[in-house]
Amino acid sequence: LGVRLVTTSQAVVDSHIHFWDTDRFDYPWLQGFAELNRPFVPADLDVGQVEIEALVFVQANPVWDVVDQETAWVQHLRGRDGRIQALVAGVPLDRGARAANAWLERLSDEPGVAGVRQLIQDEPEGFALQPAFVDAVRLAGRLGLTVDLCVRNHQIAEVTKLAELCPEGTFVLNHLGKP
Image (spheres, rainbow, N blue to C red):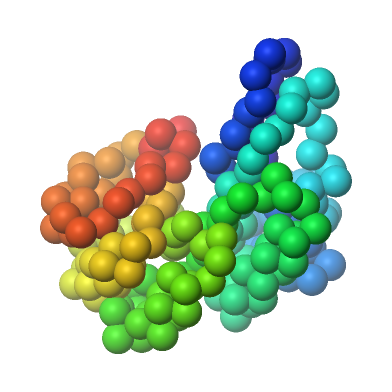
């Protein structure tokens, strides 16, 4: 849910925060977390006396059917909360560059969109090296979008190879490779 600091004399940039609205969107992963399975929006962010200068929203993994709506919702939140400086949108990169082309082009022109991601953490070995996935990641890089990599520690070697295959890309390793 973002970094929680006790005290600081400097403003903080939270470069990876999730917001979600369970009244609007379906987040299957929240079903296993009763205490989190409720809307969590910027007004719910409690960091005590820490000054949050900026936030980067990272897609919260709703079902694919509503991921575009989630992006639009966060853009609406950005308009109301100036701390949300950028966002990482969900894109089904595994569908390949041809299928993701219009999606990625639109996002690359959308104010505030810094990057894209598709969760890899629960995918089988080799998922991030499938030709369709690699091609879509390359396209994202050519369009100036970063690609967030949300993986588990045993997948680090795989996404390292992905980065080698996509020199035009810029990658962000989420959570330092879980756990």
